[in-house]
Amino acid sequence: MHAAHSFLPLLVVLLIAFLVPILLSQVKRVAVPIVVGEILAGIAVGRSGMGWVPANDPLLGILADFGIVFLMFLSGMEIDFSSLRFNLPSTEGSDRGRVGVLPLALLHFALTLVLAGAAAYALFDFGLVNNIWIGALILSTTSLGVVVPVLKEADLITQRFGQCILVTAVVADFATMLLITIAVAIVSQGLTAEILLINLLFVVFFLMYRFGTILNRVATLRRTIEELSHATAQIKVRAAFTIMLAFVGLSETLGSEIILGAFLAGAIIGLLRTADDAELSRQLEAIGFGFFIPIFFVKVGVEFNLPVLLASSGALLLVPFLLAAAILVKVIPALSFTANFSLRQALAAGVLLSARLSLIIAAAAIGKRLGVIGEAVNAAIILVAVVTVTAAPMIFVRMVPGRRRGKLNRIVVVGAENLGIEVAKRLKAHLEQVTIVDSAAERIDRAARSGFDAVCCDLEQDEQKFKDICATARALVCTYDDADLAYRVCSLAKEVYSVPHVVAQVTDPSARARFDAMGVTSMNAALDRPALLALLTRTPALYALLSRTDDDKEVCEVVLTNSQDLDKPLRHLELPGGLLALAIRRDGEILVPHGNTRLYCNDRLTLVGSIDDIELAKQRFAGAEPTPS
Image (cartoon, rainbow, N blue to C red; front, side, top):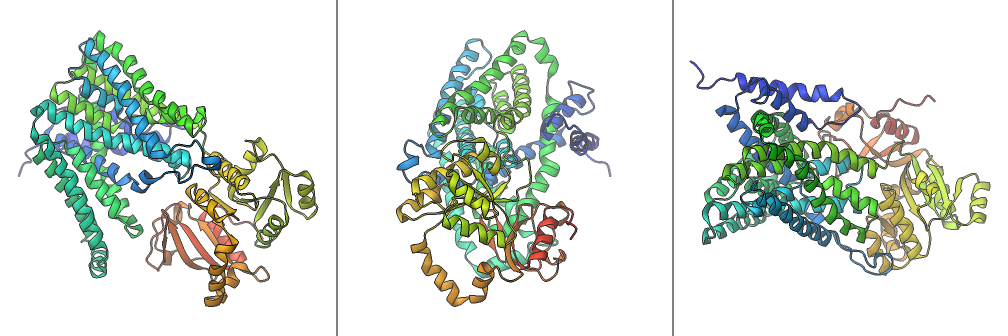
């Protein structure tokens, strides 16, 4: 039996997908994204290079089409819809004059669209595009798939600055896809009533979401799905593929672009999944980035037509114009971020948002198919995507460096008054490395005489000493009674210096919402006293574990980063001594672990046991060598 199509081109593409990450991992000086390497390798073996892979191979075409569908599907899964509701609840004190994240994101996209329209008009005037609207949308795209990992790597994704960039990218991705779908429908069919059928996609989206939330509450069904999610059944993966193709098929039927349907299908999965579905996300990412998505990007390189680009002087001149336009339409609107952040941060945000990849390539392919842009312009857009996706993240990291260069092993106590000293004593009794910070020299001298590492610095300003202290802090606790002063200190630590965990004493209950909105853990003695008394009454042993320092027992949260322990069931870890895992904090949710619970990178395990065993666990989960006793 002979195959209808040759599998050799697919073999070449898969060899490229296998070798590119290995080769790029050896390049230490310049961080080249894998997808850029795949596109460049595709150019080398495609029609602009050695011609080993034909541009019109039907099997590669089908797999590449499915690759872009899968990429849009995974992009939809990345959306955190709760971030779209993020807004500052108060306008008093330090919040006065601040603008909510979602309004800033919408303003940024609106300004981007206006500037992109002006650039598209110039292209139209020179005869390089045939439709100003679609040309503007191509330039308005961003790359959520680039923004998310860069923010995670810089440890900014949970900070207000990172959330602002993330929500802006989400709005740009979603709005651009929706508007491209509408524009394509108008160009293809004209302004008819059939365009309104696109709304059916959203009706189905909301109905499926509602139906899914109801099914999620059925314990019997949930248990059955969990039982069928392993071995050969993999029912969750099958369900995800079914939902994705159902939305893609519906998009085709309604005459809209399939990337919108795939994106909405991914958003459905993202909305319905729980912390127990982390394995599903990993499986889908493995399928997508392990097979289908690399084929799409290599195929982009294979189809890249360098001779046509070189033959067109207009297209060659277009590359620097497109590159400048691609950057400016994002950076200039980002100046609106100065309402909340510094000018440097605003410019850095604009640079990161200028990174384009999958969506601009998909939009350009749609424009090429409709005859809106030519072959040479499409090639120029691909070059712009390669340049921006490579350069933008590197420039962003240099403008807003990641917060960490050293080990996070310090707890900072702000306030050297009686409460601060007592908190520091308790932490020191639990063998924590403590630094006390205060602006009053006499209080710092008293703390230093008591044996503490104490630093005097002005907390009202971005002082370098405080910045250096926060650079190695895993937590900070502010003990000041003054709510406004405490808020300024917490804002500086959390949002400017990116301390992971900030705790504050809040004496005014009405001010608590401001701290909570910033992600600061607040404590009010009057409000929290009943909860503490109830805990002491119901579980005295647990309260003793949390509060006593006169024995060798400890409760501690450790972060899992050791690659040797990732993706392993808890029962296979062989925890030191008599340690017991009480809980796992993952993506903001608390899991009660059992023996088969698999552990993932950055899981936070709450452990109980002896102090020595806790220290061994900290070193082991961080991948550090045990300290000799």
